[in-house]
Length: 141
Image 1 (cartoon, rainbow, N blue to C red):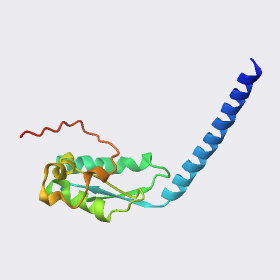
Image 2: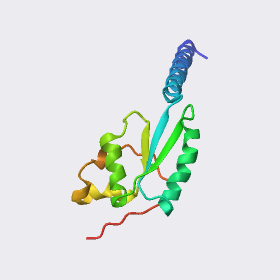
Image 3: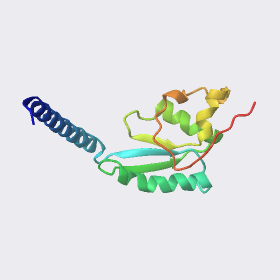
């Protein structure tokens, strides 16, 4: 191997070591942040229905997948097809990762199609983690 390639290889290894060390530090900081904390989990439907059961089941297991396995405090907040829960999360929920929820997909679409009851939040500014459902939305005019 020529000298130039050797230098680049050493530089790449050094950079990789630095990045791995900083990644480990960041992971440690996140674990410290969540250690001993409660995480609020809003379920945007009534208990006992399909979505309420889905949200409750998710709340029982999601904590194991967060750093330090924080305690998840689930709460059903029924109203207006999850708009009540979405408004609460957006306007009053902690913005540090200790509040999230399971809301109907339709709640996110309402402001985009002009629903006056859904003007208290901007769906473009919500942070989406994922979905356990496979749904398709259709808008017909």
